Length: 254
Ligand code: PGA
Image 1 (tube, helix red, strand yellow):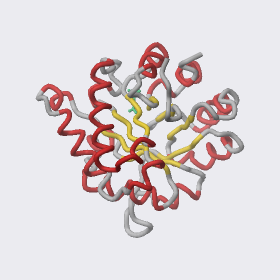
Image 2: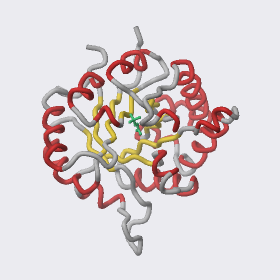
Image 3: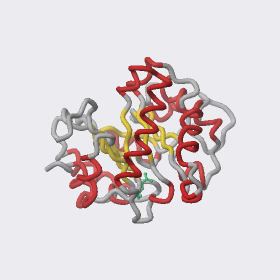
């Protein structure tokens, strides 16, 4: 059995899905099932327009509520963007940074990542920093290089004392929303690369950083993924949209 030094973290990323009433129903159902949250951390990353309502429903429970993206300035002429303080104001306590859809569809640059992670930390938002290689990067044996480059960017302004507030999510781009999961060996290898990089950068404090796996996580692979020592949690897209599929993932060890 895995002996865990880090609390398992199961996060649902709704992306641009659900509507207000289905969101609130889902949060109510999950809230009713997660108990006191002592043995695992559960959070939803929700469309920002629903943050206030979702946080109101989640209140009084250990369920975390986060935004899916954030800009790094406090205010100014950034049409369409949200400042970290705005996410906080409507009840978010965490945020995704660098999700592959932000990087690939919306062309977010590596250079922004460090500033976003820093801005989140400075505003009391717990970042999940997402990284991962494309299929051509993997086929060209560039996975390690790509992950390290993304880590360099995201952790540019992170100090050892910040470590306990940061989570890294390894999400191979080719496994997101495709039904194709990375093999356990591929996950283990990528997580080992990340863990080693973190230790080099932050020393002992890096032990506090959780590394999640994401990419076609489903009820039928959650238990095996969580059985890997290198996996501290899961970032779940499609399967987080319904209680029937998300609850068995949260309760992967039931
Ligand atoms: P998926 O998405 O579980 O639908 O593959 C994961 C993610 O993008 O975080």
